[in-house]
Image 1 (cartoon, rainbow, N blue to C red):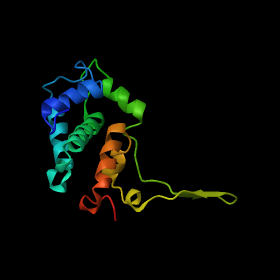
Image 2: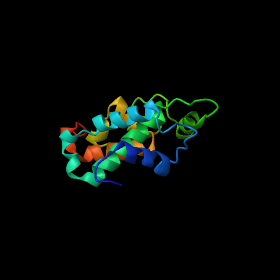
Image 3: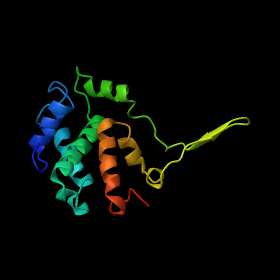
Length: 150
């Protein structure tokens, strides 16, 4: 991995780490470029994360991967992205985290940290796939600069 994100590095990540075949999406797809560029915006350099070049690069590539899984459109006859979204349960409504449940005879609860309580819908969407979870984990470490902690 290079010490700064590049489109070529992102493409290598998509092919090598994610295992997305070129039959599912071509190297020159505008969707790939769009997901990469959006990832650069989500993981912006203003947070100081770029001072940790390996983590910054991995976070950009993971953000792009999450966006790709959620937004790529299959080109028939490929059903690659539809299949992986179904496998991961992506695209289902996410309303938040449940921290307590009860009925007349039983009750149970778990403690959810303040940061988890303040996740946005976009954050909850990213939490549904393994790449997005990596992004949210890193961004939460950045603290209140990014808004992931109270």
